[in-house]
Length: 151
Image 1: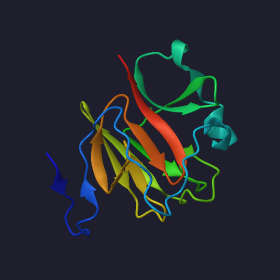
Image 2: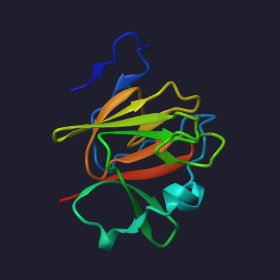
Image 3: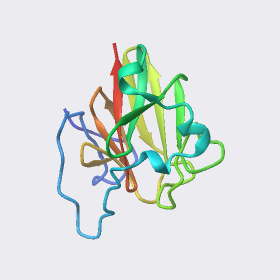
């Protein structure tokens, strides 16, 4: 079911989660960076753990090309961006200072674009706000990560 986010242009509809779904890049779109671990700020990168060592919980997965590293999402609200106050800090100019917000409530995790310049995408679709599930691919500007739930 697709619903429109209130007070937003119709091209920014709330997209449902679809695991593994990808879409071709739009003309002039930013080429995604798949080797994204190197873009994490040191404080964020130092919290990352290897996927096979991860205890139960919610994570953002970043790749270094060979290995997937998980950054824990311990708080109910997680700010993602390049700004100094971001909980998950990404050192990439095309990521806004306060790019997106992850909100966990009960068994639901919601991703909100925070008026970023280069957009927030889930499984290839630009979103303003959407619920996300295990395995959903998130792209903030050019930086690619995956939402992971270890249960």
